[in-house]
Length: 297
Image (cartoon, rainbow, N blue to C red; front, side):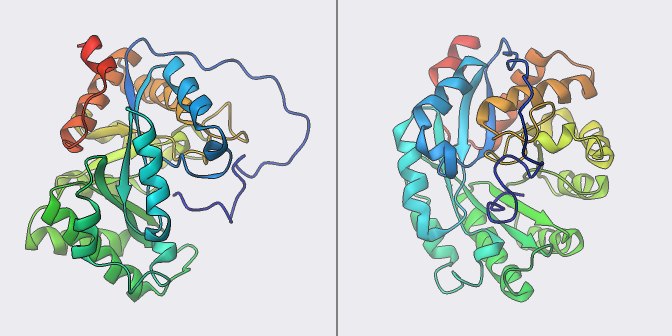
């Protein structure tokens, strides 16, 4: 869902007007991870120390900041090197598949992923909603990322929008060639795709979309994904959860989505924080656990 900065404002696209007072974000009394954010985007990039501090204050113990263009990968990596609890991915979003078609190769991604702070491949996948790159190019670039994930053992961060059938088909075809770890990020599709992802060995990550009034299918998916395959994220600076929708999203908002997901699943927020953190470090096994998780153990 990310890489939509030109399509909707960071604030989420609601009409401008006098902002109503909102309650402070309620901390969760156990550390957890924002498994997908963009700390190099917009307002977040202007004050990263403050953004990370606000996240820490509500219980966020780790953040994965995501690459969407190889052209700007070094900026993403620099942000990860700046903070102990921030990691990076490397990859090209489907919007940029055409522009970077000659830059993206499995071998090149493998080489860039050797850095100790790079713990994931992507985000990559298919976006037929905007179709900013030819579909056949998106599919080829997607498969290059899958091969890199297979070779490195690093999880592939999968983006899909209005491309569910082709995404599922490619994941099935590539899994038949050899298993690779992956996560369906910012899940916004029908429950069947979450079920198929789990069947293929993948994880499913939920963002603030989970809290939106019209996201009933997303909530259905969140209820059926096994606890041991669940992750939470923000996709910040986009998609702030209710009641903060319309404001700039930050990693701190992961706490809001986590609480909503805990309610859906009938577990305490602290228990879901523990479960999703264990899931994160199992999937992103290259990530070195920050001290806050050791203290909570």
